[in-house]
Image (cartoon, rainbow, N blue to C red):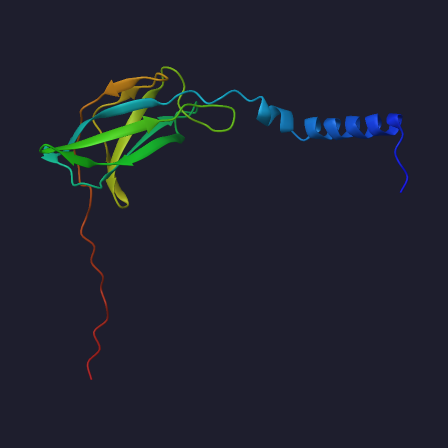
Length: 154
């Protein structure tokens, strides 16, 4: 097997480095870290009542168009000392994902299955903060489902 000359080796190494740079490898290595999330926490009541453990709470912000919802995070309700409690981290926007930006209004949705209601309160997103936000919501979280089956007589 024939050895490559010093000049050929440098050319090969240079081509490999150029290919890595062109493929975006450097942008992934040198990308800025995502901003630390904003953490909201507090109690939650729906129609004045404690919410069942496991109920979902999700957060979103609106995109620049004012219509598109950008998900920010979700969590489940915990039960503590006769209260329904939540802790929810809302992600910020970085180079790889959409998310909240400094000063954005954060909206919260409380849901069980496909049914949900918006909380009456909103929050303001600030990176690396812990915000107590006791929330309330009004409306039906779950509706009864009925399935109609045909009756067959013999």
